[in-house]
Length: 77
Ligand SMILES: CC(C)(COP(=O)(O)OP(=O)(O)OC[C@H]1O[C@@H](n2cnc3c(N)ncnc32)[C@H](O)[C@@H]1OP(=O)(O)O)[C@@H](O)C(=O)NCCC(=O)NCCS
Image (cartoon, rainbow, N blue to C red; front, top):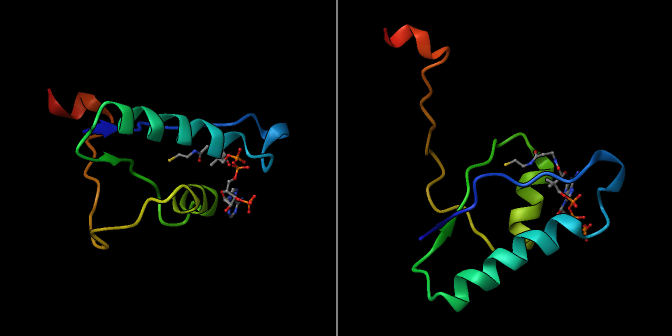
């Protein structure tokens, strides 16, 4: 399984296909390694991220999935 942790393109260079090229490199790597799946987390309201991942062939599988975060971490002590 491959986790795409995050992708970012410098603000002056967006909408030129760089993000898609980066993500598709990893998709190709996942294929070459015969990974069972590849996944990434994105905020619903991040239209660029949702558009990017969708345009690279990813589909939302679990619509109500939520991310739980402890922040700041000192709350744990
Ligand atoms: C998300 C991000 C990496 C996209 O990079 P990019 O190089 O601009 O993306 P691309 O030019 O390769 O776009 C590929 C497709 O993604 C979609 N897309 C990209 N930006 C979009 C936007 N602002 N709104 C809607 N769809 C968008 C489009 O379908 C686009 O194809 P098109 O240009 O032919 O319509 C970039 O916007 C970014 O760095 N954002 C800030 C960091 C971030 O939020 N990263 C994701 C964290 S999960």
